[in-house]
Length: 412
Image (spheres, rainbow, N blue to C red):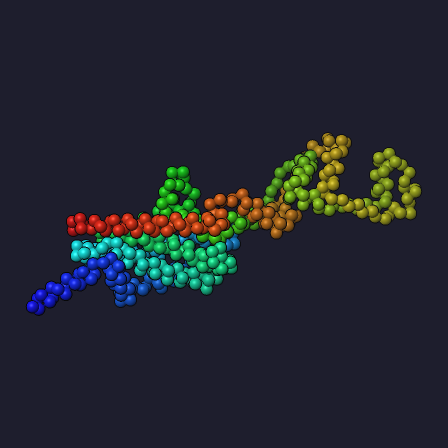
């Protein structure tokens, strides 16, 4: 009689826990206990340290220039992928024997994977919230208004979560393929390098590398974050920094007067237009003016102007007016071919045009020339990136499920 009672209770237990939903709850409780009692909570302080180190580096560059924005978004994507991969790269392979035994006893692989997805999503959400909080605390100046929520930091946090969760589920699939933790950790560096090299943000990819870029999580994370950071409307700072670095360099050569006049005739050029408006002037005495008149065949002015010969006359015009006069004077054709040697430092030209004007012109002009359509700041562009990340997450989850369905064929 007692044996019958025991057999009945065991049979009822098996029936009660045969449902997929009940198994999800059991495994989810198991993972939460492991988080507390097996020190898996340590991934949170590790994520905080990584976020703090990265934030201190990117706080002075993110949102300020194209180069800074690209490096900053790449760094944030690296943080998200690093956190996600290390969350789950060992979780299945380290208990492979247990999973195999429970699968033979009636465990549904889909329930096991779904429990992992819920647990890992919560973990990624905590890590993302911690990362964004630390970035803000360290001094990263996020734009105030978001495109989907009232706060840009929340919008970018959503992108970070999708990237981290997709990387997490990808590593979960890799863990289901690996036979042991050593194999999983050996695979880990190749996984990270592939994500970073083929992201398209760090290196310009050759034509054959573009299809591989489509397979990465990092590509869509960088596109989404760069779009949210308004990459296309940020100035390009590297050229200006190069100009400042060579400000003491001397430039010398020979330029004819005619070439200088031709340059000053380019009235549509904003820099030339500014040069043409520069005032120039000359001071003459009345006596010098009378002598010049005599040279031109108008004698007899000196006696008439004798009381005023020492007085000065100031004639002022602009550089553009002078250039127009020289260009239109037929008597100056031969003189325009006269070579004029020049020698000056770069900073002298910048002083002439104005440092702020040169900086703004260079950064804005080159920034417009480096416009990238894929980084367009729009809700639809960001939503597409989010959808791509979610599709990859579901694909990796499906692949992990299919892989574990064949765990019984493991010959170990």
